[in-house]
Amino acid sequence: GAFKAAIPGTLLFIADGWTTAGVYFTWQIALFLSLGESFIAYGGALAAAALVGALSGLVLGRHIDRGHGGRAVWLALSLIALVILLRALAVDRAALAVVANALGSFAACLYIPTLMTALYNQSKRAPCPLRFQVAAEGGWDIGGASGALAAALLIGFGAPLSAGILLALFGTAGAFLLLRRHYAEYRRESERPLDYLTAEVGAIEREAEALVRSPRQSVP
Image (tube, rainbow, N blue to C red; front, side, top):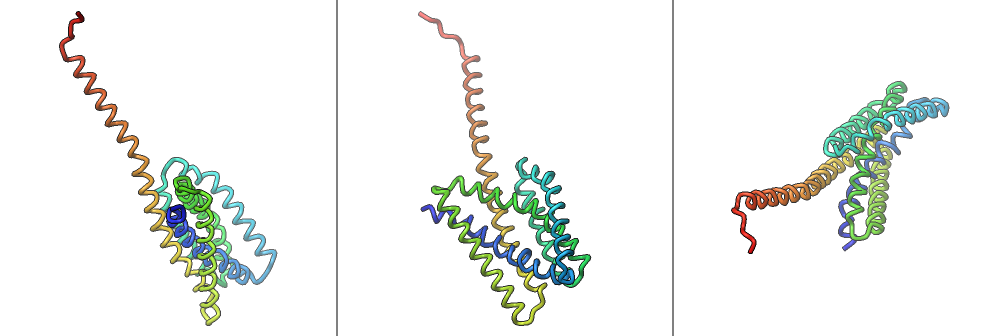
């Protein structure tokens, strides 16, 4: 029923929640420590990232609007993976941490529209959009909580903060596979009406040609 139709969106949000736990929540701790626990430096890094994100969003959002969802998946998820690796390397390196933080805002301008467009497309086709959204949000909580718990366990047992950040790669890989499947299916479904109309137009044209070529019947 409705909850079965919500499984793709739930899995997608589980992957996103897991990714966020590493690339965002764990990263915030690493960024603050990398900047010498300075609130001024930390606030400046966040402000710079917000500016990069605002400027990037004005340009990159049009890519999704023009129907290039499949390409956006490759670009967005590749950038997210790059950000994860860069942030893992940037721990205890202040200058690199600022760059990695700003790059994350740039990547988010492609990743978030790519993710949410897929989710909203699935929601519109669901038998009950409300149950779909409830299940999907529950999936995000599961992914975020389990990803944060896994990072905390690693760090608690002595692993560096970078290990907790790198865990986000598992969520990114899952999101990539799910988004690629969604946009491929969505493209096939969007092409079906066009193929149907083309076939209908061709049939009408053939009937018209047959009528023109056939001898006129005399009217009694």
